[in-house]
Length: 603
Ligand code: ADP
Ligand code: MG
Image 1 (cartoon, protein in one colour):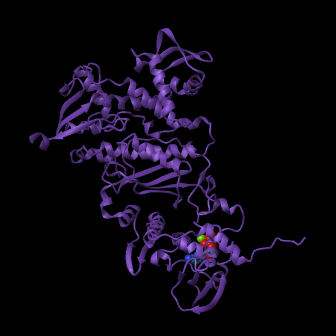
Image 2 (cartoon, protein in one colour; image 1 turned 60 degrees about the vertical axis):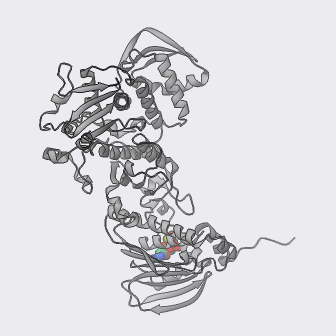
Image 3 (cartoon, helix red, strand yellow; image 1 turned 120 degrees about the vertical axis):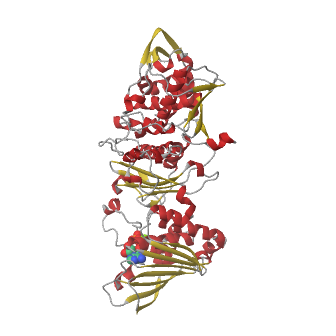
């Protein structure tokens, strides 16, 4: 029998591989723009015709190529960016596989013009379907331009597969957005069928977001910044009040490379949901900077997916960063900053672009390593938001009453014997009403207390500081095997909260002590509710387990509506509420209070 295996000619191999890298005009746009970034350009211009179907041109003022490199760049695995396998892990630039240009040239007519600064003239090369048709010298500015015409001219099946010009243009704009967003120091333009759609000037990230999405974003953005060992998070989220009812601007980058990451998206969404109503989607523009050796980016041909060595800890940092940003914002809107020049001392220059906000003291553990392997004790370090050493923040709160803030803090921490400073009125045994400088504050007592407890429980789990109360008569709790093993899993957190549990046999637990906040509560009932909630929120995350636990406990133990409160109890509750990281929203996303200002009252 004859040998039947043949080696495919390069041009065919390239065409096949091209299908993986170049699916549509937007994929070529992405590759060409990323190459321009890698070349150190400070200005990148993108011009398309027919959404790139008939022409894509990318012009940059980057380093350019020598004559030899200009020829070589179309070869498969031709790259200046790696020379050995280890480089793959250290690579910082965008492309690193030396495949893009070979792929594009295999399925289009490409004209390259390129010139290095040190050369007198540039090189022009025309490559059609992987074949060099022409090479000559051209006078030109230093830099590079690629013109890609008639994409898929030799692969009709693919060409027919393209969507309408409108749909393809949306993809092009999306790629342009992703590349330009995280490179605000670089100028970009996008021109489509002779019309300039974007003209982005070099600037900062906020200006870039405004350039891409509209200048009304000025007031919509909240800065996010969090640094931990080996991880830095930077960017903006859209304030909750501007969150969209449909999935809006959600841009997530790792080392400035756009990626999709459902799990980390969840970290952001979760942080939002604890703070805002749950029927809207958060907008965000966030970059995570990590050591390239801590991620594996080369797992997807179009490189929009990334594997982290320890994704759970990145989740935790991201989650904390977003919460912190929202928390700071939620505290600020009702405070009249003009009143107290003193306050400015506490406001970091780190957020110079936004209006001044109080930055809670969030000491980060210098030994915190987000890439520590799973199961290490540090992993319990999940929410730095609750690491504030000084858990009161009465300075901000006192401003509501128009009080002085230059007095020592201690005088505002509620004391048993202190007389209330203010008049509190309970309405319908459910709402606390009190006068403030600018009008009237109406607080939902149940939601307020659930916020106070929620933060308290989270802190206790962090610090292992829950206070327990011995049960006079230990209760037995019988469970099915499944629930018993769940309960066992949760024992460490439960104990940190003040539960004292003992497993008597595989399905029976003795409750020897309960958290002091749960005094007078049916402990068995409470634990059953906790188990139920844990099952509903079926995630195996330790992080979520804690949140879940704190939420359930807070919901169960918070003062119920229709409960009479003394004036002292009301004052304590109000003081505690405004010492919280987030005083505005309950853990279930509901608003805790409203302010009726003078104008409202006049009406
Ligand atoms: P990769 O980017 O993965 O290296 P490409 O096929 O995209 O692979 O590019 C091949 C090589 O061509 C690059 O490594 C680079 O040396 C060169 N090159 C491509 N585009 C440009 C450009 N705009 N300016 C300078 N050099 C470029
Ligand atoms: Mg490339």
